[in-house]
Image: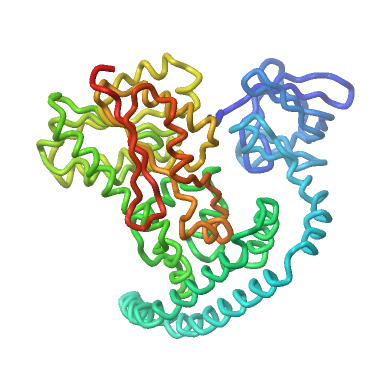
Amino acid sequence: MTRQSLEAVAFDETGRSFQLEVRPASALSLAVSPSTAPLPPLGTVFSRLVVTWHETPAVLGRCKLTASRGGPPVLVFTEELPDVRGLFSEGRAKNQLSMLNELGLVLSQRKSVKGAFRSYVADVIYDLTVYRKALDEFDRTFSNETREVVETAQAALLARVSPDFFRSMDGIVERLGELVRHFTPEEHELHGYYFRQQLWTFLMGAEFMRRTNLKPRGYPGDAVMMEMLYDDAYEGSTLFNKLLHRHPVKHAAAQAVRNRRVLVPALAHERLAKSTRATFRVLSVACGPARELEQLFRDAKDAARLDVTLLDQDEEALSTAARTVRHLESSKNVRLNAHTVNTSVRMLLREREATAKLGRFDFIYSMGMFDYLTPPVARAVLARLYELLEPGGALLVGNYHVDNASRFYMAYWLDWQLYYRSEEEMNELAAALPGAKTSLQLDDTRCQMFLTAEKPPNA
């Protein structure tokens, strides 16, 4: 959780200490206010700064007290560039200059890249460059046109060129799989890094690829990425960028995301139809934007019976989910019994009191979280969620299959790493659930697998 301000102690060149309160002023500087005695004069140099985050000290190097534009004084670091945002979110301030020490090692790794892969990357760059140059010419012809003219012309051009471009990209992705399918994990890491470095300017132009690679919320698959997949539309400032954005959001794994938005509510309704409870409680774990609620709340009868809890560790994701709820309430003219909970599954594992506060549920689902959990953590989370079921309730969790057709596309182009599982591995996760009746099913793309664990009625 990000802290707004932190306590700190600054030591000047004579060894005197100053109690401070610091908060982010920018990515590289700290705004300062005194905790006790007044601040020393502007221009004072401190030999070190010790910042306390949840009772854990983080020691930073030399810094100087300087004026800011219309705000409090700031500390600017003179020998290193600490990651200020990391300090306030994680209690760690990695020196961003340290990457310079690693450049030699990174550059030397290029020698280990296989010749066939180098040739493949060169061909990809050539093909994309040809497409981009041709499409940029069209963009230049639109520069003085009205918005309506541009949108109409772009739509016509996209309809004409997209089939050829997508076929070309399909071939590029297929060739990638042929080359890397039998790589070791170390070889995947090396060649994936090389690939992304070579294609970085292309990746940064496509909205979806840019976000998966930069991970602005610190993890892949955030709510914004999920909404891009759900929308399945052209996005971008140029024709080429629109096409390169659209291809991955149309690929098999992306379609699996759209499929589960329908599949999960359908399974929930099967359980709802069999239940005799007046109120049917549902828990969505790692809920993201919660777009599946559009299919879950079909009418006033559903709104009257369903009580939905949306759980996520990302506050921004919960804000998006809350907007989904408000939109549904407005469009259907009905009040929905749906509320958000800001916590993580790891917190649920550590604190049984947090679990108890959630209560019991008739149906629990997690569509994508298990893709990021190691086997031991996945087993523990599954067991804890199973405990939250009412007798006769059902737990549904999704996980991408080892044969996901988009697997290498995601890993190399999108830097999106998952824990893929086979049917045997998925069943093994549920093997220790007491009395559970389990079943597996694949979505229509056969990219994603769903495990259902039903609790006995007399449990």
